[in-house]
Image (cartoon, rainbow, N blue to C red; front, side):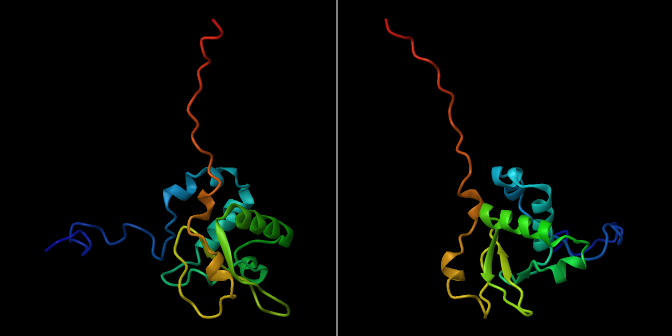
Length: 150
């Protein structure tokens, strides 16, 4: 039975470029929190989300060693963008890095936290799925003035 996934003979084989892709739900990019992010924070979010494959949410990197290979040159910009993403709830730190060469690990919050070894003790307890939605602006109905004193 054909389900459209088997690649019919009529469909050209080069209908898209090779390689994987990122799946970021529209509710993430349509959220008020995302719209408030700076451009470097949005770009960093895409760099972090690009690492997610199937079962590694919680071991995503945001280190300068990793990001330098992807064109990032300023550790100050990365630091500010990372802080912004953490505060706005788009990423969650699962492992705190330390010197000399242990990088921090992160998880994106629009996906569930994968069960991986090595998380810090409080990482699972403090993870909140869809944390970027917590401070969403509530839609306030318009208030019409009363008829006054009369």
